[in-house]
Image (cartoon, rainbow, N blue to C red; front, side):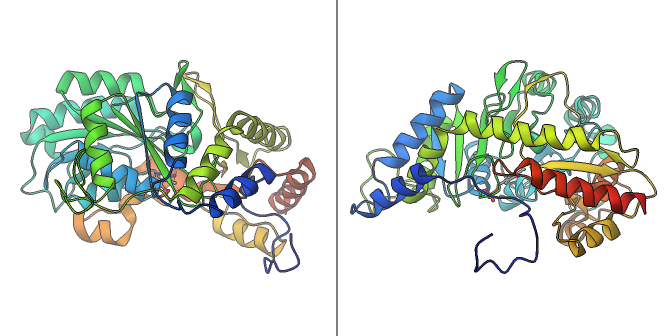
Length: 398
Ligand SMILES: *Cc1c(COP(=O)(O)O)cnc(C)c1O
């Protein structure tokens, strides 16, 4: 903690991992006139493309804007349906709503918090069949005039890939586009394959609490040339290849990543494997100290996750323990902690739009009610983990 830090906490909830390598790289860019659209965004894109083996990597201003571009590239129209998960950060659903398409939720499985593959296959089949079969998956209101099912938007929750084999088979069977939200999963592997590359398009995000950071930023990866071309145009005010500065072939956006962010990201990429190892070690320290407590469930890793990319460390309190009171007591002892995630379908504007009610997605709600994200980052020391676990253990035994 620095002298100016006003935080009442003894440990930060999350922290970027920045060294002189990153500081010097950013400073060097500040000595040049190219603060946007220079060489660094291209270098960062190339580093990510090489890391995951993608034909295209497209840097953007955030994970959220990356998700939005994927929805635009898939050409999803107002009223069309996108199958997704209510157990995620809001942005995965918002990207669908920006285009006035309709997110249709499938509940998650309790171990990983990833979309439940059995329900998922059924939902896709029923929505394709239409009529009565489709109705049970649709929201109570707001979908009276819906179009066809067009896309699947699974999320790799907490750094662990969703059951993407099942999801891809479903997509191929019904000719659907798959957008993989890997904003929490850079470096993770599913049956040996890199997260982000398991669907038609994947998105990584670099907010300061993510595994690597660019302050604000994101990256889309895809092997699809057509999607890549349209997304490169849309992020740059709709300028297609060959357009001049004031020629705009499409309704586009300014979703570009600046050069300071890009050079920071490129420097972080050279350290990604080191950072993931450090995060795994911190998760191991927690696991050692918490896995025997009967009042807590520690994170579970699916056999399909051949490499975990630890994003957060979320434990669940046993039934009957007051999660919110525990978070307050932790804060009073100088330990920050947070509920994680809040179910998307119960955000007020989704209730307004679609009439969702508590109980609609019971596993998501249960995980949302019992989950606590503990302080976690690659710079955390074993002593800090020890402190968090000591306080937590003491409060749970009261
Ligand atoms: C972080 C995150 C995003 C995007 O976040 P930005 O803050 O826009 O970069 C999207 N989806 C999930 C699941 C995330 O965790």
